[in-house]
Length: 454
Image: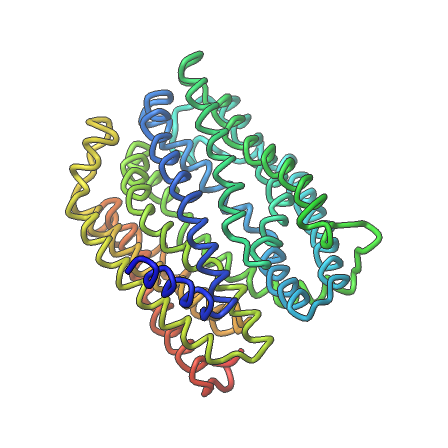
């Protein structure tokens, strides 16, 4: 029986489409590295709360959110590169692929340099204490913000490496790079907690410098070995390619603006409406439920570039089959989220003890958010992979426009607190689910025409 079973497994693997097999292998690898990353993320919460205090930790989370928001100002070059690079590799045009990489590094580097200069000129005139609703003194607060922003800008340039890996459907390797960064952050934060107490500047330096160190080392070895064929070079920079990168990239840019409003403004809204301490409560619930979202993202991530490759090869059958597979995975995710809501209080008591109390209402609303956003990630994998993002641009912008007013209405006016803020995001995303889902159905059936095919 054992030999029959092993033979069956071998046959199943052998008969699996190479593109699907690669996606599954990346998913398996991703489960390991992402699992480690999630564990580290969970361990960091109680350590950091004890080190900073609940209120200061909430302020730090809000600072990180705003800097992340600003980091999206890359005109969509990263995602534009991902699609164009994948197309060039599929056509076996390594010179063109390398030129895309080289051009992206130069353009992206210049953009981030410009943003750093503008930020350094104007940041001192911004009332940061009012924005973050905090009592932290102005000078140390400004230093933390400046350090975080500059480091994030540098990291984003180095992140071109991750877009190259994602385009090659090597999401597992990207996950491993992120895991190394998280290990370094955890080690540094734990060491800080033993040597000092409450120094936000030290914590910021460790948190933002760790990914830079790992990306620099990873880039050096990968471009010297496995990615040698795509190593960036100034001699291969082609400004003419900037237009093709930006033509698709500007659409991704405005979609990213929508993503900022939908996914990265919650901490700021909660800080302004309810104070930094409430951000900590919200973040504990978010990190807990985000574990399920992360697992789902592991399965989704390889499919973006896989759909790009399939489109270049006109492999409609594979795309339809893969789309159905991802929908089945979502049903499994729904079951997991329901169990997580039921077990939430028990998990919190083991994880953060009595440091933070999370209401059941917030758990339910967070679970709904995970399900809606994960469904939209399936839509995004198909639409972005095929480069049919014009319609997505419209419905994403509409959702972004209604999100903040809806968050204020539910959170403040209807007294739902942080639960209302995340519920507003879910309701805003439902519009994307409806229109985006209809577009994907048309694309998969070959009936998409007009705006549905753009």
